[in-house]
Length: 307
Image (cartoon, rainbow, N blue to C red; front, side):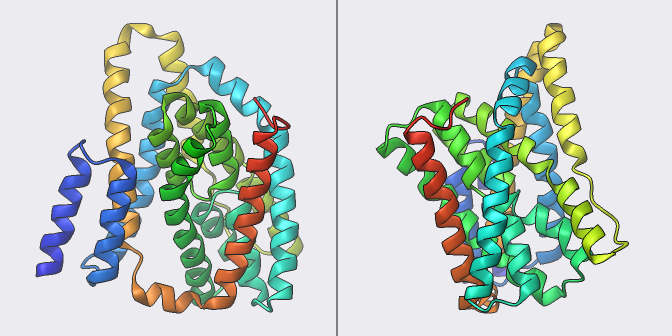
């Protein structure tokens, strides 16, 4: 009973519009580590839908030309970062003797878009529930860390809004954490981070198709439908200005929805999850993440990667 009270109290705080994304995540993490989640499956399902709906809503606050420019400019960086992350991830997994399917899923989640990529590719590889849980747990722990520390690092290094948005999109796993960190840094960072991250998320499809061909799998591929609706929302905001007050309202609601999403994601991290992850997959995930995060930050800081 008491866990339900604290769960809904945190949910109301996150949905109030006053809590920032990092604060909402911190509240969720505190709940997950102290209490047993009263609605684990329902929360996981709802948070996935709410994230996608929130991303669509954020499109109503974006200009289509800026979206296309950022997506087009970030295409090459995205392709290179995915290739490097996949190769490095599999090499680290082999070196650390991580089970091959778990190593592949962790590499995929790091390379593309965290839990969404793992959820799309996992059934194609024939991964077990335990392998999926280990991979998702590893990525989730690192997402939580990134959301809290990336804005601090960006501020310390005096990264511009564009630089930070690009770095977040290339180095943070899940779309929710990219948007949360970028929103904390500023509106321009939010626009760049969201756009480049969604362009990166599109690589779920070719990677899933390639995995299915190699493994001769017939599992159904999950298409990232919400990206198309995000672009449609940006079209409306750009070419139908008469409804600008409605777009502003929808964009604000979307930011609150994202904050609630991060709270719900945080409540899913428990002591049991940390124990289930184990040290080898976590070490693989941490080392791979550090390579991607520090490498991309160094290139952005030197100006070798820019929009």
